[in-house]
Image 1 (tube, helix red, strand yellow):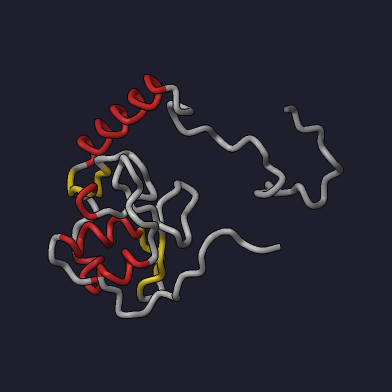
Image 2: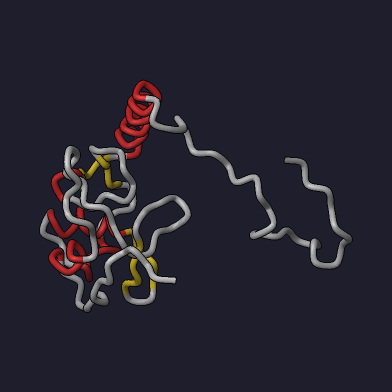
Length: 150
């Protein structure tokens, strides 16, 4: 089976803004978003390993666009969050990323949900995963098969 996604060169360290942007799509027509093409976490944010820790790429790109280096990632207070103007978690376009506080980020998320609902482009909020087969629960290995409600 062949993949339709073009192969990308491996990420080189040290991370630079250019290297991170190379691992994203070309700007999408209409939105200008550059979507991360590498690994993503369970919330949809791009991730890379930095000094043995998994870090979110949008935050790393935002900090680098403000003049910080990748090594300074942990020195920036966690209360400073990355705000996506476009509302797409995978977007790493520096012009779409702003620094902000949790209250501002929550207001942005609410606005993006309302915009998606008005445009009827999908769910207005994240859905919880209902399929537990991949996650497993404590004790399920030794218990008989259970009936899972759909």
